[in-house]
Image (cartoon, rainbow, N blue to C red; front, side, top):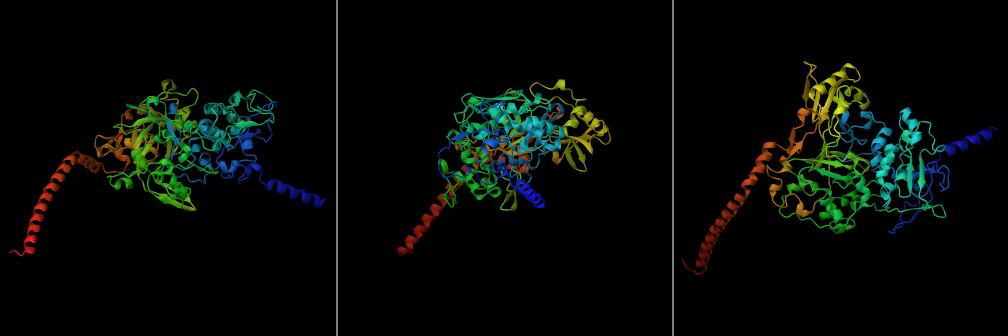
Amino acid sequence: MRNGLFLTAIFCWVVLAAPTAGESETALLGDESDGSRAVSVHLLELFEEEGEKIFPDDDPLLPFSIRQTCGGTCHSTEIISKGWHFNAVDPNIVGGRAGEPWIFVDAATCTQVPVSYRRWPGTFRPEEIGLTTWQFTLLFGRHTPGGGAGEIESENPDEIIRSFVSGKLEVNCLACHNASAGQDQSEYAMQVARQNFRWAAAGACEFGSIKGAAIAQPETYDPLMSDDIAVTYREDAFDPKNQVLFDIVREVPNERCYFCHSNKVIGAGISEKWATDEDVHLKAGMKCVDCHRNGLGHNISRGYEGEEQVLDPSRAALTCQGCHIEGESLAGPLAGRLGAPIAKHPGIPTVHFDRLSCTACHSGPWPGRKTYRVKTSRAHALGTQNVNKSDDLLPHIITPVFAEEGPYHSAYIGTLVLKSECKIGPHNLIWPAFWGSMEEDNVKPVAIDIVRPIAGKVISTEDLPASGDWPSVSEEQIAEVLALLSSEGTVEGTPVYISGGKLYSLDDKDPNQLSQTEHSAAEAYLWPIAHNVRPAAQSLGIRECEDCHSTSEGFFFGRVAIDTPIESGRECVKEMLEFQNLPAFYTKAFAMSFVFRPMLKVVAIVSCAILGVVFLLYGLKALDLVMRILAGKD
């Protein structure tokens, strides 16, 4: 009897301790290449989330699971899900250079705040503004390839129950690797908005469609017992062996990247989309993944200088310099890869290469006297169904802002390095606006669920513009909301409002008045941009030095708009050079010197000519003297 119990215990321990197929972090059958560049045919059986095989005559018919279908025996989804597009929620991942954040917007409370699970300075973690992983997925899962927060269980009991209805938003390989014209990411976004997380991948692919919405179902809903949410597969999707053909490609088509990474620049002089030039590399026939590459781990190359210290040294070949500047590697010369022209930059002082990134001259919209606004896919839900197409839609992102790239941490081979070269390059910028609490000198956001009912007593939702722009708010209204936050005791510390680069708080002497101060929490959040890349003939400085070095040009003296819902601050601007840590007087004086440089060149040339004539005359006299001596004359 004891031996039987002992063997039973050992058996249970082995079963529980052994990793399941889904947890394996070893490369599987389809993860190791034999070197062939031919495209593998993906004729696959479909499996639902519990691992049961799907047949076309099943009742009920369930959506297929990417983890079970792709990750059963072919691909290690555990390794893939640690890639750049999925690993933001991992606290052990170093975020590298700051990138585009997710931007939480609530016009009714005058809020636009950059959030990120990565620890980029200037962003806030979603939970700091009251967003759980489930709420984050519902808001932003539309423009993700699944995974990340979409697969993390919420700590909120109500959301745990809801997740039994909605399912998890699994890593969706099809979002990038499906080359079929029927792959519809806008439908994917719609399924996410309906809380149909487990159905999203099937609904977006070319052979599946979904009816019903989890958001309309009670917590007791069971997809095995009801067809209120149902999947339908195209009749010819399954072959006689109950397999389905997926049009999977290794090199992701550009159109898949565009859904999450499109931009629309707004402003005077900006052409319509049909009249706007695409990135010069793409027009030359390249693909996004020619530069933004990755292996099985899906740590996709971002292509910035210094990334080789974040991941591995081979990343240096995937930067601007790696293709266009002469250099060597163990494999031979780097420059000229993929037909890239080798940049010579004749006549340009070397200080430009020490202080400027390549993108400063070659990327983004041509700088004007005023900055533009830009709408991005991730911030403005571009490409989704029924999206608000207004140019004034929040959040308001300013571009291009020529600023010093901030320092960032990188981890490689166990070392932590602080990169602080701080070259100047083009950036997008957002001015945070949120209600916060200040203790000592630290400011943290107040959860949006706390702010909404209080701000709603002062800021009427009837005043919200249909365009999605800011409501018109006065300083008196801001003071009134701050007073309510203070009197109702819902905020620890001193209630404050961050907006337009200022910290607003109630005046100590007159509680009905606002005081404004500078504060680090109110500083703009900037992230570097690299596209669209312009050809060399359209780069800054191609005409003359005054493309940048002029008091009338935007590179140093452009006016960066300050964005705020407060009426009194809407016309405020900052000069571009304030973001470059340059002294205003010296920069202006240096720029003004270029006015006289043509004249100085003429003077210098004439002076050199006169000196040349003088030297020639004295040289001829010296030669005459030498000839006399050689001739023996006195």
